[in-house]
Image 1 (cartoon, rainbow, N blue to C red):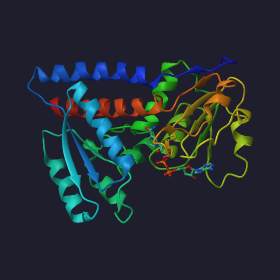
Image 2: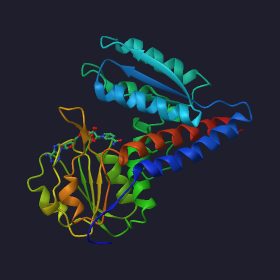
Image 3: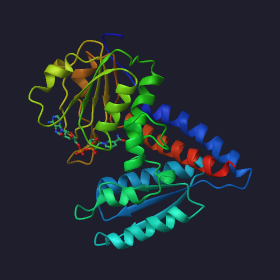
Image 4: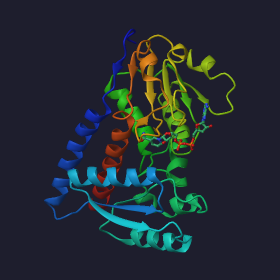
Length: 288
Ligand code: NAD
């Protein structure tokens, strides 16, 4: 890997490329009178969920995907939410469903995600999609954020096979599926989390570091092996409304070979992967 000042991985640009391909696919289906529809399910007032809702709507509009909005108040019941999921599952106009996380804490999020038909689970987080990914079986959809991370690494020609990879964070949405995907590509993978005693011990030996902890400045320059690829998945909102990742960009940039910025790194690619998955779903239901 290249050493010295890191190459900044431009997620925004990669996302634009992916979205252009998606837009072409949507137009192609449109020629046959087929619409591509995505349902967004927003419950309550969480600012992160709302922000993702708006960003997805904007990106979908640009590529010609029709958004079906289901916006419920903070006090919505499980029954109301599951009714919506069931009706969307039956709606032939809708190719995918995205519940915007986090939901209000009192709700059983996994029950909602698992109620989505696997053929419309475009975020790939239902038990069937996750289980198939883990079993190395063909799955309908790969979870968008880890899928985006792998796409970024591939786009920049970063070799995964045989490399030491550290994933920081073990959530079902990001850390676990990403670790699996890196393992499937034959990296030697270490998963670190909040109980990991000496994080730097692991990161210093890593060729690839992917951090999804949601902790500002968790990864600093001295924790990085010279020339490593560092992917910052974390999103931390500052008091002034600004957004930073988990990585101290300034100090890591001097040692890493490749580095993603926040914003403009993994975030836009995640949305592009969601739209790509939605198109894939529409194509599957359109084919005889
Ligand atoms: P989560 O809260 O479910 O998981 C966080 C993980 O980080 C946990 O496994 C925890 O053990 C670990 N962790 C916390 N503090 C740590 C520490 N000090 N040292 C080591 N590990 C630590 O969160 P999540 O849903 O996986 O999201 C993680 C981050 O990624 C958040 O900032 C979230 O906003 C962001 N995110 C970004 C995207 C994107 O598209 N860019 C998508 C999803 C999540």
